Length: 91
Image (cartoon, rainbow, N blue to C red; front, side, top):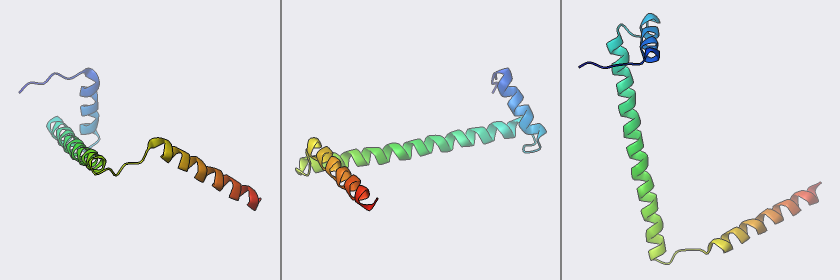
């Protein structure tokens, strides 16, 4: 297999080999490919988790377990106001 690399990537590989961390350019490339594989696997795990969470939300909607967004924001504003008032009393 032949692979074309930019001069910057060739320099990076050379630096890694010269540092003693790797014995050859092939080792550097294999390490990079392993990292790429791990990254892809993590991305797939996160995607599955996200799909699961979305499905949980959809199931809650189907069961009628929803709260109006305006109500939620009003509750947060009320809590924030009470917090600020309590903090001001302590001063």
